[in-house]
Length: 418
Image (tube, rainbow, N blue to C red; front, side, top):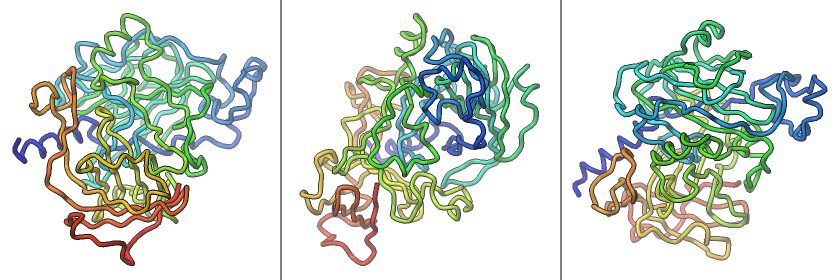
C-alpha cells in the first residue's frame, strides 16, 4: 500500500465526521433557576434528584424514562454509513459523545438532504456556529445544533445542520455567531426539521436515569456531566428502523453504538488532562485563541472507535496541533499499564482503514464485514510515559525520533492527571 493511501484514508476520516470538527461543548448554559422543579408531575419524577435531568426543560418537562424512536434522522436511502460514538480525530482529542450519520454523496451541496424528528418531542435549545472550530484553517460556517426533549430524563441532539426549515426555522428565528437560544418548540415524529449537505449529521442520546458512567475524576468534567449519561444510539429505535440502521453501522463489534468511557482506576487507559489546563473545559485563554483550543491539555490513550483492537494515542498539542496516532506493534496495552510498570515507550505511526478480508483501503463507507485500522511502519515520533501515581503520569513527546533515539525524560516532560 502506498503512502498516498494513508494520506487519503486520514483525510476521509476527517471529512466524514463533518465540515466542522466540534459540537458546542458548552451545553450547560442554563441559569441556576433552570433546574428547579415547577410542577407536581415533574416533582414526582424518580430522577428529580438528578441535577442534570431538567437543565434544558426549565421545569416544563413531563414524565420520565425513554421513548421509542419511530423514524430515522435521515432517509435510509440517503445514508451511506452510521458511525459510532467515540472517534478521536483532530480537535476531538477525547472520544466524542456523538455519532455520525454520513450521507450517500458526502461532498454534496449544502442543504441537499432532509433531516427528521425521530419522535414526538420539544426542541428546547438551538445553537449556531458561524465558523469552523479546530486546528485547521478557520472557515466561515452557518450551522445549527438542536437539543430535543422527550421526557424530563431523555434527550437527543442533532448537530451540523446547514439550515432549519418550516415551523422550526420560523420559531427559532435568526441566531448569529456562537450564540444559542432557549426555546420550546413541539415537533412530531417524521417532521422535517432541517437540512444537511457536504457533511454528516452529528447525533447523540442522553438518558439521565442511567447510572453515570465511570470516570476516574468526575470533577474534570464539571461543565460536561451529560457525557456520563450518553446512551446507546440504536437502542430506542423501533423495528424495522433499528435493524435497518444497524445494517448501516460502520462498527461491527459490540457495542455497535461505540463507547467513550475507558478510564480504569490506576491504569493508563482513558482520559487525562495536562496539569493546570482546567480539565475538559480548558483554560479561558485557550478558548479565546483562534479555533477555540480548549482541547490543548487533553490526552487519551484508548482504542479506535471502529476497530477497538487497535490502540490510539490522542493528544491536544503535538507540535502545536491536536493529533492522533496508532502505536507501532500495538503494545503494550494501556489497560495493563500502572505505576508498577515503570517507563514505557510508544512509537507513534499513522494508520488507515482497510477491508480486513481484502486488504484494500476502506473509506468508512459503505459498511463492510471486517473493518480494520492498519498501522504503517513509518515512525512519526516517540512518546515516553510513566505513571507516577494512580491518577498522575509523566509524559514527553519526541517528534521525529524512534525509541532507539530516546534515552529518557528531559526537563521538557509534562505532568498529566485525571
